Image 1: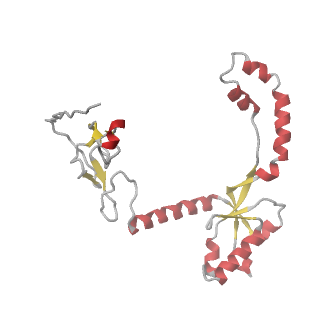
Image 2 (image 1 turned 180 degrees about the vertical axis):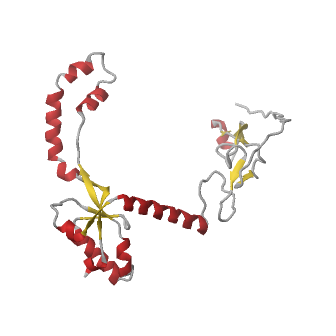
Image 3 (image 1 turned 120 degrees about the vertical axis):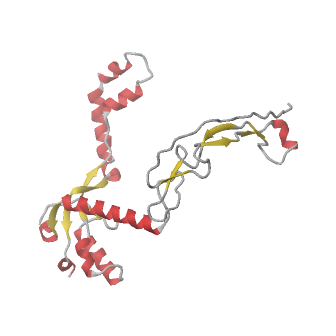
Length: 240
């Protein structure tokens, strides 16, 4: 099969209007047109003995610019570098700002949580794990948390004054469970019209079986999630 090349002339005789915000610039790659030429390369089986490239031919077309949105790029507010299609920057100023935002978000979450002292927590009949938000780690009990923080102080990773900044949350737990109705809906979706109703007649029997299986798997599927509404306040005195 032979290949012929035809050149297509494309002319745009028009002017585009761009209303730019303070942190926006015309894309230097497409000049604000928001367009670029896409090669769409392809190859033929007969080409393998003729060319070193696997896809030596092209069917070029006009596509959206891959470096901007609508011919416009945003600038980083900290270093003024153009961001292309990225919504973020690698500069120190941007990273520091994101760290600050995350800290304020975590602090707001912490301030809203119901507070319990370590002394009060030890009197509770509490068997769930605990979540230390600062480190993103789960602990079996408050004793393990205290021991971990003592080690961090001994290793010089934190100061005793940092203890009041620790955000320790209680947790919720869940394990394997089944919703029979959803299972039957999915299983009978492509079956005949009465398949769902016929199977739902045995819903209770199937639910009982699945509940028994879920209980058998409870220990091996038990999963904990932070409970952002209940927290434990650790003081320097708790580490003595």
